[in-house]
Image 1 (cartoon, one colour):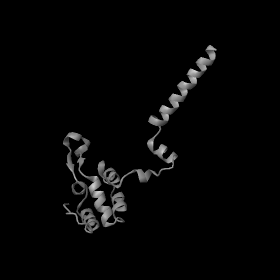
Image 2: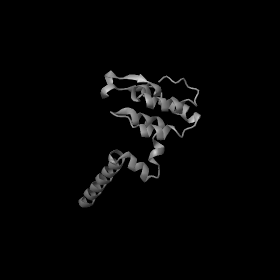
Image 3: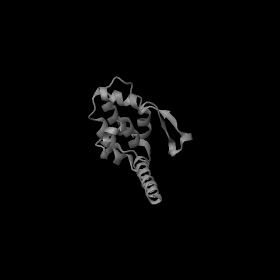
Image 4: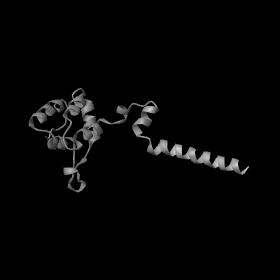
Length: 130
């Protein structure tokens, strides 16, 4: 009877360990794909923009691919969703200051890219400040 009790305890230990692994250790993307969700649908467009500009070097191709096909309403929603995000100079939080999406464009894009970006955002009613 003692062996049966120990076996039950060990099974419970491994069951709890497996559950904790799935919940905390398994990469979140894999879990979402496993349960049938699209990874891209989980990322908001504003988050994708921030990721494209966040670290050294801006992924301009991602910016164009994301923003060019959007309608006026979608662009305005992205701007509102982005809100004020801390722009971290050199990756250090104490040097950062909160900027809106246009402030990020102002910091991250060169003159030619800003012109192209202004063409995209010109269809909105927003005041373009970059």
